[in-house]
Amino acid sequence: MSEPRTYQVRTYGCQMNVHDSERLTGLLENAGYVAAPEDTQADVVVFNTCAVRENADNKLYGNLGHLASVKEKHPGMQIAVGGCLAQKDRTTITDRAPWVDVVFGTHNIGSLPVLLERARALEEAQVEILESLDVFPSTLPTKRESAYAAWVSISVGCNNTCTFCIVPSLRGTEKDRRPGEILAEIEALVAEGVTEVTLLGQNVNTYGVEFGDKLAFGKLLRACGQIEGLERVRFTSPHPAAFTDDVIEAMAETPNVMHQLHMPLQSGSDKVLRDMRRSYRQERYLGIIERVRAAMPDAAITTDIIVGFPGETEEDFQATLDVVRKARFANAFTFQYSKRPGTPAADLPDQIPPEVVTDRYQRLAEVVNEIAWAENRKHEDQVLELMVAEGEGRKDAETLRLSGRARDNRLVHFTPIAPDGSALRVRPGDMVEVRITHAAPHHLVADGPVTSVRRTRAGDAWENRTATKAAGVSLGLPTVGVPAPLADAPACR
Image (cartoon, rainbow, N blue to C red; front, side, top):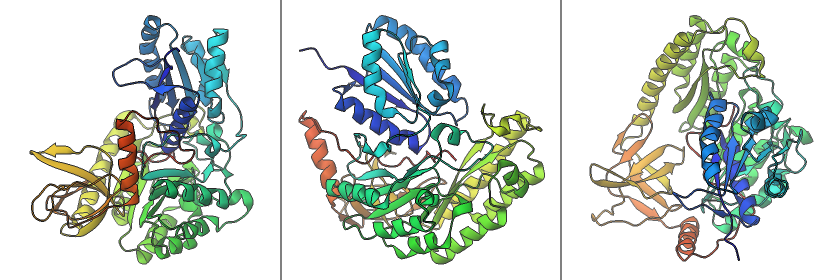
């Protein structure tokens, strides 16, 4: 029998793309492909692309150009391009890179194995872009890399018309899953050993719009609190215009819903928000934060901010800095505005010179880092509960450190030693308590001994999976869930 064909999936962009890549991986393995070992050339290379990030086009075509010569040296090798940029560019991809074998869109990721086989049989490129979603992607086979944390998609698409964003035209209008289906998926994940889920949607708090229930998201959070064995629930990203007090109440009153909120600001200027078609203003945004902190004083709030939007004046920029200082974000993902073809903002007058955008970006970063560091220093000498993260740890000044996430999602590096000074073995998914010794702008450090350890079902699941991999036995494919959330990849907003 011939060796199975190998694959590699390269992912760019937000959590939606990470989510889709886990499904692409599951689809390929379900079709008989196997992951390419490190330092070997895969028979199939799949690019899951982003059309929102700056220089997305250049990055893709640069990578495709590099693979042209590689493909010449590997007969039978195939290249596939999917995701948002594929949905946007379509046949432009094969025009510019005729060595690409398959192009597929955001609405038909399930077609990839068939398209690859068809391209091989016909010896010609296959381009298939659907205009709308036929089947919710949660029905597709999915390979989760994490044994203890998973994404759960509650909706796809977006009904907003932000002038800087191309996502609605690429992902379509919002489609909501039914609550029973979502809860059944979470229960199945928990049965597999998962103890943390992140509810995912383009505008997660507009969930329910398709079936006419404006309070559906808060109800869903409360229902998650009834699932035995589910320890941590997060969600991303809500839209300020649709953020309601019932969600704040659900967060505060449901013990396993974490006091963490990622809520995009984009700008603190009412004028710029109006030009962006963001249907809220500075006062409303700060009001939400005030009510969140009144209900949950320990809440960590993060955000997205764009600087240099067309027409942004120095006064507008100062308004953004003003909101940042008042909101005191635990972190902010900051972006320099860049034109995206197909968006209304690309044609707006008063495009800001690049040097001005860069200057504002640097000044914003200084304020964000200063505040984040000050907020982190408040945790010094506190004892925090961490879920241990996957990874072998790192050495810092000859001290081995592991990492974990606090309940508010702050990253903490800790030293795995017991109170008696002996080495301590903890597994990803286990819970530890540590005392914070010092803070940095983007993480906390606990150099002392671990205060307590709680071995969990999630740690057991990770250990079993690791042992199975080491034995060279096929793991099979979970049909639900995706991997642990990426701290540095906010949703496309």
